[in-house]
Image (cartoon, one colour):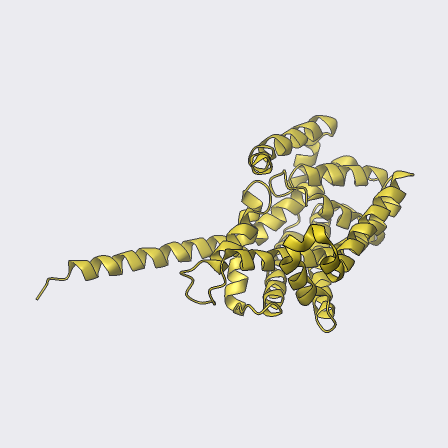
Length: 320
């Protein structure tokens, strides 16, 4: 109850608070002025990459579901992932779209998929999102060792590697841990869908492609603003920024992402105003890339209107 209340309230405090803090801490007006110089070619490339990332994530969702015995068609998975991603960009907490995606997949009146129920569908969504950390955490750990000030770099990097180790090892040991027996189904499905031979290779490949797309969208934002970005910084610091967006008490990572970007940008010797502008540009590119999800809502609304009209016509037919 307290956690749910915090998820609803804190994003409306933390996100504006951090952005206002950065506005005064950094030259916010200068950063926003830079956004007026966005190069349209890089802007288009970033939006296309962001949309491609959604398609790849949908394929990973479908792969994950198949290995726990749940069928999701390719076209439906892509449209639902666009909708879920758009809602994640708009709703506080950053997971509302994932919950909605699980509900739509598991609801009883679903016509295209098998009736799985909400909780099995939710477990698949959680496992699919967990797959992303298999690729993200090693790069984020490398970024922590390289960019976080000493001695905290050792603490942060080692902690991230430890989390990765737990994610990989725990599903194989859960039967021996009394504390986690209530979660045994989830961990067994996680092991089946992510970690067994013949599956983890495909999951890791897809997750690396998805991570690369995120990083390249960030690069497109920088290049659109004519901001230089070293390849080493791109592949090590940007994953740290992406990891910071996992904080659940924000709106689509806004605020926390900007703080992380500005901090890492300053540590690397770059202009912090440039870092703020690039982070804002990244957020806008990801939002634009998720806009096809709005078409799903419009199509569904049209289908519901047509069904209501059909029912209304049937009931209005004269009796003979």
